Image 1 (cartoon, rainbow, N blue to C red):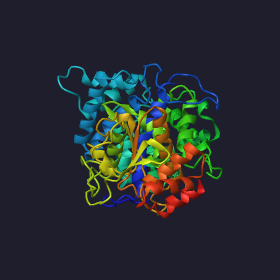
Image 2 (cartoon, rainbow, N blue to C red):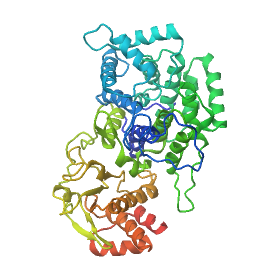
Image 3 (cartoon, rainbow, N blue to C red):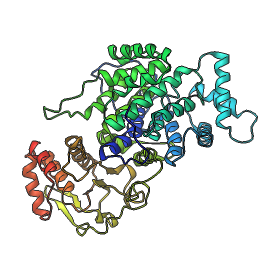
Image 4 (cartoon, helix red, strand yellow):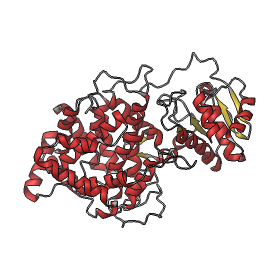
Length: 500
């Protein structure tokens, strides 16, 4: 496996994929929550993020899968070494604290928390959890649930630079609640697959990871992966077991065809959504299998492939939303360090040197859509109650003042003609235009902006105009440029409009 040094800077595409890990994990979790414990579903059944289920989840609310991953990511995002006793103690305290208020703690995990906390005035340490997990395994021999695999993704982000350290940390953190060696092996394999996908953008790291297992265990896991690639997700009826949970997730990923993007409808990046829907249709422990699949899919396709319609709804313990997962993902992948501009940690991203940031005009085809530079966020036009942002913003800038959290949509789009910077450009542009259309259908008045409304904003505005009028997007761009005469979309964006 390629070595990725601690001092290495992530490329734009790698950052996209690193952010995608937690976002897609949470989306899979929230998507599957309403179907948990249900039977397998037919291929033509539409899967929606409608909430409900056994615990009455709100639409877009994540479950224990993401909550436990978030607690782990909070520690890795602070730059702590997840192999250290101090870091593992912090994780243990956060998990046990969450478990006291959560409604959906897994049976095995709750048993470990309860045993480790018994007779103590303070929270148990990581050593206490590990001892309780070992004792449970000694008594029952049945501690191979999927509860450690579902939360393991942050380990991959924390050790992009060191596969050996990843293996050590994955095994140790799994053993805090799941003493069965197979649970640890599954975490190792999945974390290695996520790491490889973030660095390289491919899913072949799962097979490559077999070499990291003890020699006597490799054949068994190779055969399990073979079976997963031969059978549908619904074949794994016991997906509460870590082995079948991994198989169900891998089946959904490997058996879902990647769209070719040649017919003008589905794009290759739609593989993320289609695979998560396949995981949910597999039935039974739907939220967990989809969460596991989501972490690997997000690492492969990136945050830019996660539909904005899902990200708008996404929320969960401890009062977080999608952009909080972005922050945790970026900082975990960068050992707690923001980028040179202070993103994503700083309160505000400084665009003060950009002269045209205060431009503000109405969309030529829809006066309830404003086109602007980033300066308009300082004081929104009267009536604006939704925002679609096409550039990076600070923690205090989202949601904009007077806008509900779910009505401020952030789109991962870089103003560059380099295809490596926007690997799913067509998907992202159409997703952004669809977000504007959806907000308008809900009666919102929308501000669509980038930094200076010169490249990204007019492009998405043209695509939105095409949705409204049925005219070619390139023709709609001419209309947009008449109200934004200083705009000049880059060559890649113009080509995307020509190809529309």
